[in-house]
Image: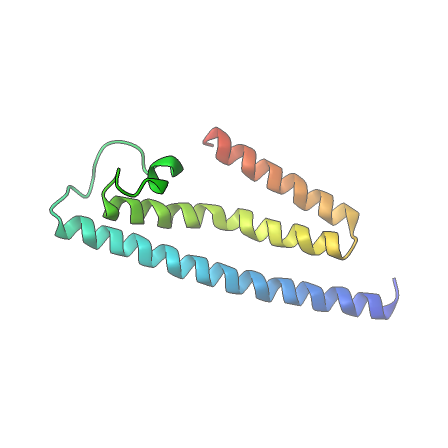
Length: 124
């Protein structure tokens, strides 16, 4: 590997880390605001803050805004955003490795992404 290629790879890695940092910060802030807003909304409406049932509403329920209370939908959306953050980070890494034409790293990132999707799908 030439020094120019290595420098490009290092700079792309730094760019990826900067992108991931920005995405992580943005998603985390949005998720916390949604969860806090939902918590405050639930507390102000007099709803019980500890209710039996699923910890997060299904996506189909979230897409139907009139079906669920707004506070519960906000909290569930925030939780889902935080849960999806690792998948977004792995996706960004995979795209970087594919663009850099580093097949071993791209394949490893793809395997991790598939494992994350399978574990999310199976509820693990």
